[in-house]
Length: 155
Image (tube, helix red, strand yellow):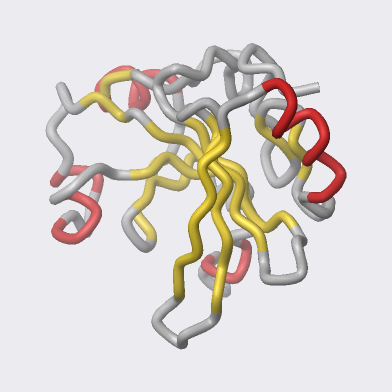
């Protein structure tokens, strides 16, 4: 089921782990075939989230009831987004391969696809307000799928 070569599908899945599923659906395989690290974290409004890190490669974030709300991956992951982008790419390559890049909440949104993001590393996640603030040789190591459509500017 878990596949580090699977496509990254916007607003849907990474590694065949699907947004909107309950994490319990994956427990049997997770705990019998993989190393899993689990921790709680809290949003600024004190809302609790639970993170499951599978083989130090895929991070699954859930609500307290187990609903999967985001799935992320790091540079160990081998799947691609839109058959071209993958973890471990330079910022310059991402710019060459995409039409539009914008920064929202410490991550890069590509071509106004608010179901997919590329996480900016420290300190750029806090200080960069524009793509021009990101060094072209910066290696971007983490990608994520989630529903970020509330971030989309209204026309």
